[in-house]
Amino acid sequence: MNRKKARFDVVGIEIMVHCPHCESPARSPLANGNDFVWTSAAIFETASKDIKCRSCSYWFRLPYALKQLLLPSSEPVSSDRRIGIAHIEIICGTCAGDALEPRKTLLTTDGRCASCGGRNFGMAAKTQPNSNGKENL
Image 1 (spheres, one colour):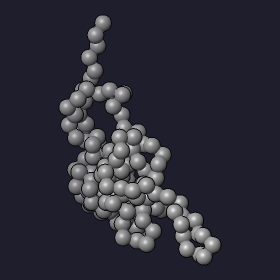
Image 2 (spheres, rainbow, N blue to C red; image 1 turned 45 degrees about the vertical axis):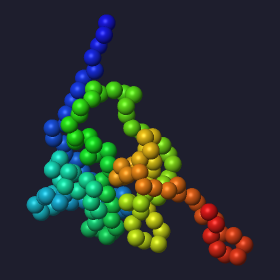
Image 3 (spheres, rainbow, N blue to C red; image 1 turned 90 degrees about the vertical axis):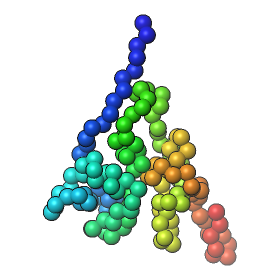
Image 4 (cartoon, one colour; image 1 turned 180 degrees about the horizontal axis):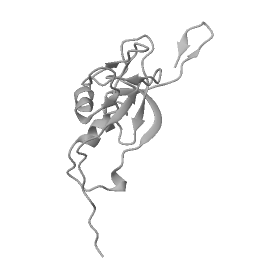
C-alpha cells in the first residue's frame, strides 16, 4: 500500500513571546494596550528584526523556525525533514549584538543559527585566563 504524506499550511497562529533574558512577556508590535498575544502578522513583521524588552531593556529576536512555520508549504510533511537543534553554541554575525560579550545562540542540525536562520557564524569557545591574566581560547 502506497500512502501519500499530507501537506499543510498554517493559516493563523497566536503565541505569547517571552524575553529570553528576564522571562517577562513581550508586547506584540501590532497590539493595542497591554496585549501580549502575538498573531501571524506580528510574527511576520518582527521575524528578522531586533525586539527590545520593556522590562530589562535587552534586545532579542524571534526564532527563525517560527517564521518558517508560517510560510506556505510546498513539500509533504515528513518526519525525516524536521530541523533539530545540535547542542553546539555559536556566535552568529547577525544575532551577536554590539556588546563586549557577544550573544551566543545554538546551531541547528542543518547548519544554521537557531535564532535567525543565518549561516554567518563562528563557533563559541569558553575562554580561560592564562598565567599573565589574559584570556585564551
